[in-house]
Image (cartoon, rainbow, N blue to C red; front, side, top):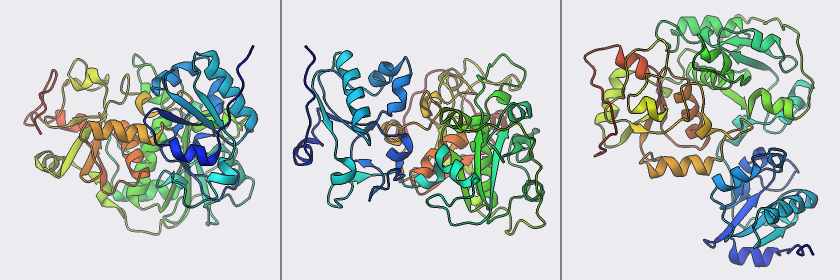
Length: 432
């Protein structure tokens, strides 16, 4: 005989929500968790301390693996809440089927918790810069989605030297942008101000244009000649960083990239959209020079007790087993850099992404960083091999509202090209 569903009231939840053994599970979309009021609730965000486990993920065979990954244990008291009672009950049944017996359901998040400003909630500081497929769909249909007050936007499908990623299917109205438009292949650093100005104007982008970027994940293979061509999801955030450095004031990222658009079931276009150049960019480039760090300042950061150089590479790269790239020979790491593991290799960000390619729960990222000594009270400069993964980690910190974060643009590629720069291999002995 199936166990009866146990419902918890707002008053009872308030008494236990911050207990160590109680785990609140938010099954709404990740965008709602981050701060978007998708059901017009009075306050966007999530109940303080809740974990994000979207109902959408129940469609994946490895749903239970994500439950374990989030360290949700059978002995925990699980409280599930969301928008839909039907979805809440389905997730409750899945937990029971997986051996979790101490489960409560909470049906009154919207009408009781979110409306009461005295009850604790949290949200991603800059959630509006991480948008959903529905938000993009509203925009391209000519509507005014929430937190958008502009009258001009450009939707950008980013890729690296692989227009077929765009031509084989993209969001209607999107133009394509090669990352090479904004970064130079000789150094893999951002291009000069004059080059950036020219490229942005060619793509119809001014300082006052709202730019929404996304990419297409296409299973990068490190053995390919150009693996980055299949990692447009990371390339989109690389382009976003450079645009913000240049001075584009309103840059958004589609959370989950093209995968989120497909998952939502929206129309896919195969039209090669023409770019609409503009005559002026409208700002002196760089308008935000503090977002980028070059090698001289990187060395100052390593020496400073108030700053950290953050290595967003894979562990084999960090300890010098591999260089990570088919065009970089040197192996090793910059001495004094703190490790912030990206995932498996130079073209993946598994430790910063969910399995549907949406951005990982920001509390989890922050906790890992803080445990490693990467804290918001310091100037942080994120780097990788050539800037892509460093840009994505930087974007996460920026979304959280961490006050002084930059990208060390040169990264391991520039550092290792100078034989006078020190390097290390092996497991580090951290003393800083």
